Length: 506
Image (cartoon, rainbow, N blue to C red):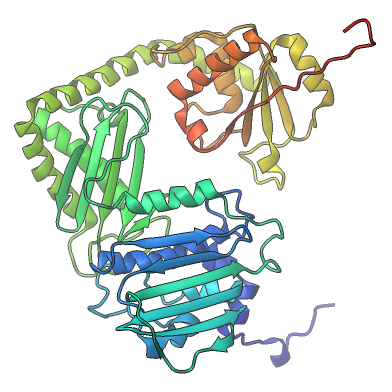
């Protein structure tokens, strides 16, 4: 029998109830702090974004971020400070802000008047204080409800700005939720990349990073010996970790600018091989693909302005062309890097067919792999637990194989010491059977999108040979799959040592 559906079933929620009942609409997944895109980091980001907006508008040069052992967060900026008479509205009135049509915030990232209200509603403790012209006012909330109100501003000599402190509500977030210091440091480091003199490097540069600055755009890049591309993208101070339209425009414009300068139709993949770049644009009313603001969806630099594609394309065409004409040594270094990538690509063609045949066979039967049932590239609830142990020979893998959880733990047996890949071309991944089978087991030939295991654990013996094999495997991953390490998928098993003795004999 169908359930009745009447007027009594219709509910209207106030803003606090809605945010607390459906937090995913505002901050994505809750998480417990183990992943950089967990909800508690989105809360912190919403607070810092407001301070960054002040910096973008030319107010304040310092932002202090503190997190104590209990998980209480405090962010203090030295901008203009929220107008004291509107402090309550900015903290607890949904869709309230100065960034809709105000000249006070023309090119900022906080747009919707939602950010810190979500922080307020999802915090067991939330305090906001503003200073303006030696006057201050503070409010304290709990779960979005006002708890303490400093009704009238008081005199206090302190620099202008805003301080916001909060502690996540553990009735909504998992009880074990915790901010990871390394993740917070990385967030702050990404914000600091936006300063003039931008330099972002993970690998050894083949030439001094090129820094091009224009109105509302900053681009810094160089090439490295790596074969992969690495990008850091920002919009109005927001680190867009998933890229978006500005990244698409840059990748296309960079290829066109290089082709135009050298007057050669190089392959896009050869031009961008080893490219590390940071792209920062400042646009009006940016549109993001979600409330977490990790991917830009805007097509233009302003609602009625030119497209991002045209804006970035014209900028690179002019400034990069000028730079390369003035710096012939850099132009030569870039061309040599492109030609190297071209040779490597052509060399790979000869061995990829053999490797693909092996990969097809490995999907049916990978003789090195004792697989598990749950994999990272599925939607299974235990996908994050999927683990591949890399062991030293069949005998060493025996004990792990017997004691493993067959649902989530797989074992890949190496045959003694693998090849030292330091300085070798990528084709060795295809030519060497063991590496080809390992690549097939991980399913990472085309990137990490279809990675089969959340954790890849190097589990070698606790002796000199084991240490050597560990270093050789690290060299292999650093050389050809650095993103596996960068994204936190590679682990080392610290093998325990035991001693058994009976008075006389050990």
